[in-house]
Image 1 (cartoon, rainbow, N blue to C red):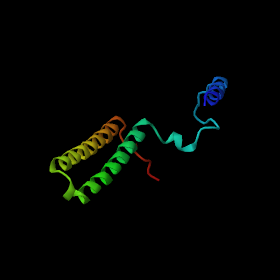
Image 2: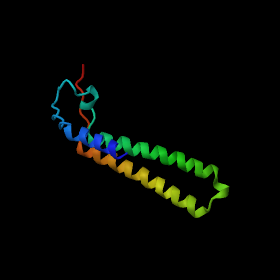
Image 3: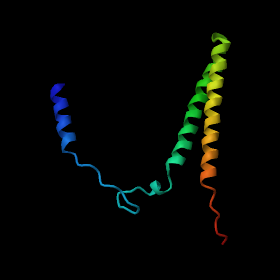
Image 4: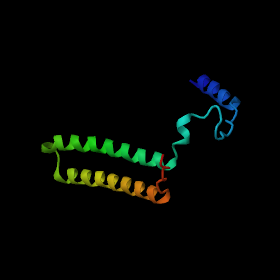
Length: 104
């Protein structure tokens, strides 16, 4: 195991730092120009809401075996996720108003 760590360390030490990507660079994926940090935040928030929804559904299916307080807090946590996602999307909308499309 120690030998493996030494090999990994030598490989990392030889690795050159990546060159900064500029727009239109041949290694830049096409979709990268359409995605920014705000879009990723909203997508991550909706993914977390989806996971929380599934967990909440499992909780309600198993409601007879759970305490009311546990179910209450899981609903509160889920609604907190929903509220924060709505707030993030709203702030994103305020910061970058929708672009008007040119009519044909």
